[in-house]
Image 1: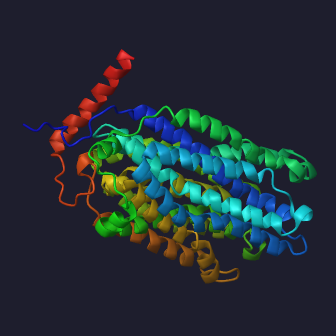
Image 2: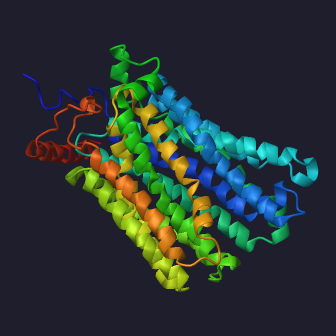
Image 3: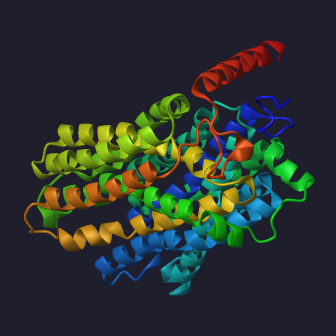
Length: 469
């Protein structure tokens, strides 16, 4: 007679170790990714681009930041394939080494004054490698944690990969902002900005030590034992899972909220042409404060999704954060700094986490083991790349001097979040589906009462393991 766990992979599950690996790995990789963003805004225009036209230098510097997003879909195809054919652990090590070495190499680049156009060319190449590498991190880490997690707690454990992302951004700010603020400008522009990039050496060492300790997931190991590892997961993903991949592309458009909070919101509040007049220091701290709030909220929402399902938090988080974008932009328009900060933290730090904390479990649960990393990586990075174009759209439809900017930009943001909510509503619920049945549109979820009992048993097993240890 079939037992309740016959649809779960057999083998050694390392739930806590996998979650710790995903958390620290994501934190370290996104530290790399976001110190580049800080440097692109603060120092790269003076270091790597012609100084004759400051406006052109700023635009070119920020364009190199955007190049990282262009490389994401390309990296998703390659690294997703690697993760589904060579294993989750292997692809995470590849991502880590690519990100670490490309970031560290930025610290050794010559300046424009030394080598001319070769300097920005090398910078763009390294940024392309960064974007390529980060494309496989979230899908690989989320899949690894999900496949190690006990049934009934996948949402909670998978949320730690996103908590690590937020922590990485906090770490990047903690390293970069004090250097930029307290070091003499000449010293910072000469060599001080290179220090955060050199620290990526520790990314490579620490990440390798942590990730080598985690075994390959039981689900992927079973695929190998049964000779089910696909040779062409990209083909299978598009052939059998394209409707769910399209849903993930639409749900990933939720990245519009951090775009509104930090990129357009910052320009609207700070740029003299808009006439609001906020100090720049205020907007240097909004991402830091938002991420600190998110670090505390994310595990709670991940655990909530194990109790009530994945779709409700995503739908509510999408629609509510879209509505709050109106209030946030209105607070900026009336030059109310405290209200703008409160609305930003509520919109981005709290409500947006209904989506942000849940997608690391929901996306991989929509796909079968054999194409999980590929399908998630391609779909999620495609949606995220589309949102990278939104700041330009906002600036075109709501340029300086135009009327009703909060209403115009807020309406677009809410429209995008509504698309995400509809995509989540149209998708099937997955939280009560056994791991081996994920990706099967006809799979029967476990009865709610039985699920609650099994979920309760997983808490008991965890406590027993802690006592034994």
